[in-house]
Picture 1: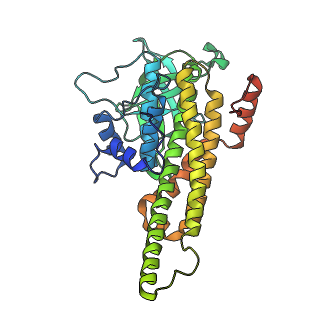
Picture 2: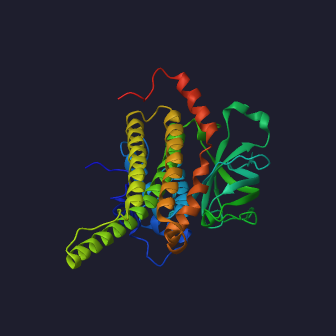
Picture 3: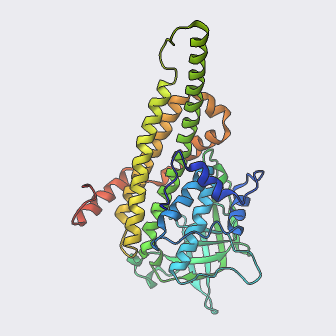
Length: 377
């Protein structure tokens, strides 16, 4: 049986299957992440091992439920995949729960973490890391770091990766600058390290040189797609109710007057929007399925072009679905439907992980290096 990226028809089933371990009264993303980890639902198939679509389908299902949750969930599952790439598959301390991981790789100007070696083979981290989602609630994190003496590693090698316990002295979380409305519950903070013990993972440049780096980037596109499906599902539900109500009214009118129904179709603009949403989501789902198939057939090849392509397409798809749905549904659901209102606030923020025109320029340059394209049938 083929697993599919959740669409309008199947998204409720996919969400129910994945989220069933979470009691309905738990709303906090951190507690929901812990419930998923403890229930084994965060042990996703690794990308490029034959079940990449199943992995991305799970990400899409969590995104359809809660984008702040999937921000933490995707970071955790990405960290586990990275550790597996490094040959580290058992990250649980004896007798303890599996740690909830973050994956922090932002490198904005003025926020860099450096390391120096310790005598015991660990390293000491110093500096501030920005854009650390879930910093106050996670157990551990992988983060990009640089040698304290930059001359020790050629600059083109890229950053190192460190694995750090967040529940130890020398770790300070500062969320004072986090004023977000959209994605508010992802609680991204700045984390300052002061001679904090950590261990290095892999070699200089390991994080960026892995084939899994770009494969993971497509997983983010699957998150955007899943959220767009949930937005589309809200329109589908409203359109079904309106058209069903109009049909009942028409039958009642015919029964009472003996004449046919008159007037224009009251649900035509919702049906129009639903057709547009179907066109967008079906095309984007097909692209993600094709990308998953390519990754499974070429697990060791550079998926950069596929990542740039799917992220740009999923970004555009999500924007157009949001526009079509909100125009058709009006302001009412955005004010009275908490789940839809949250999605409409969160999704525009989350998709800005796509760098827009810069990513399209990068995709164009990537295509010029390749012998063919994916355009033909």
